[in-house]
Amino acid sequence: MQKQQENLTHTDDDSRKREEWGLPEEVTAVEEMIRLYREGKISEDEFRRFRLQHGMYGSRLNKDYTMVRIKIPAGILYPEQLTRLAKLSEDFSIGSVHVTTRQNIQMHWVYLDDAPAVEKGLVEVGLTSREACGNTVRNVTCSPFAGICSNEPFDVTPYAKALARFFLRNPMCQNLPRKFKFNFACCDEHSYARIADVGLVPVVREEEVSDGNATVKKVRGFRVYIGGGLGPASYLAELLEDFTPEDMLLPTCMAVIRLFDRLGDREKVHRNRMRYLVHDMGFERFRELVLKERKIVLMTRSVLARLYIREAKVDAPDIEDTNLVELKPFNAPDGFHRWVRSNVMDQKQKGYAIVFIPLPAGDITARQLRALASICREFSHEGCVVTTPSQGFALRWVMKSRLVELYNRLSEAGLANYGALSIASVVGCTSTTSCNLAITNAHRLAKEIRSRLIELGLDMDDALRDATIKISGCPNSCGQHMIATIGFFGAAVRMNNTLTPAYNMLLGGKVGKESALGRIVARVPAKRIIDVILRLIDVYRKERLDGEGFASWIDRVLEGNGTNIKSIDDLKPIIEEASKLPSPEEDPESYVDYGSDSRFIVKTARGECAA
Image (cartoon, rainbow, N blue to C red; front, side, top):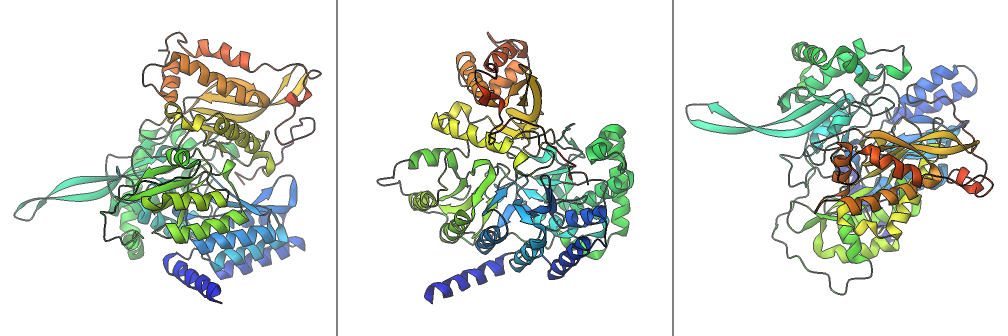
């Protein structure tokens, strides 16, 4: 009885902290539309538009099942929500959930008729799948370092939540030409701003105040980037203006969306993201239109819109004593120091740390979700976890003096994985495990690469710490391969007269202040990807300058400034040599995709990324 009472108390605490994103009436709407679809009273296209608007994406080659994508604004999840996700995944899915690169949670292989029950369970704990798919404003992402980053001018979390609240169910963005994405950064270093339709980086500017005294005040604002995005054709966003004051943030975002709604191409499915509009029109012309449209918005917007950002609040812990004693671990358990080195970073708040929990290709089981909920309640002073762009979780406001206790608890749950802040944090989309468009199994490949790198201890090599590996099963970049040091996207090639799973390999992608898109350099069979990665690392170790990181060396080679390996032309033969396959008769497994036990066949169906 006492334990039950404690659980009720925790639930009440979560309810007081969290935002309510879901609406009960939408559960009824989902139930009714599924009934009409089953009875043949609405068409396939009508139902597709509805279910995508409510976060239900078609499962691979099977219309009776759906993926439910759950919108997690700013990536914030509370313990009660974690335990509910665990329960729903056991009752209606495959007993696990998947964390995406855009901080969503996905529940796969849900029977279509069970979707209303899933929606009901989500709404009861403040969650929603509304507009997690479809041609509208998608999940508003926010840096997991927001609020604790030593480089940030201010915490952007309330701004991200406010924008998410304003655009959710907003009539102005329910039928855009395509999906629309916002990314909030905490600083230049931890920035994904330039790969979004609208990316926002916080800035503080000093302004003189003419009140009779020579005073200066600090004004909050943003560097607003527009027109970025990843996919078959990727573009980095461009800077709209040097400084956008915080009270101009919402009208600026509204102006961009209104222009996209009016001018975006609704006919060409594969060229109707906003980045194509900006590219085809020219950035300077689009910039002029945005600034002009913003003036119109300022003349017509409601009082509610004016106040929306200002009313947002920061949910930071109320910590009085910042002079905490930091105790060094005594008799630390095996693996603890390796875990700290690759998963833990200091916060700007003295005595506290952010702890990253990497997940193999973003997967976490129901049992682990429950354990994480309990761990969050006990160890995080802010009482929540944050999903990360690397498909994992971040536990913030952890007292450094309790890291050994935390490590032991995570180990018991199978969550003390190494490598979150290293090259071993490999990203992989769900690919052929659930997606209609996927060609290869990037999801399984990401797990295989991660396992091999950890086995070799490469998560402990500081020289590789600046490098990333990201994989997608098709060109659409759900795995964000375009911004990886080493990126891959799925393909099919004929080798030795046999259809073979393969990947196009890219080098030199990155995010942050010096954002760059990767360059395609080779095509590599799936079963030789790990060999190629290890061969590149071996070459780097022989060629690097003193103190030069792996990603920096890749950049130098791409620029044609290498030493013995002077340029990419010198590197390509090395990659080709490591990519060779024996004949199908000698090694038939080399021609079979990861996660499969049969001959490789390309099976795709109509995708719904653009539906």
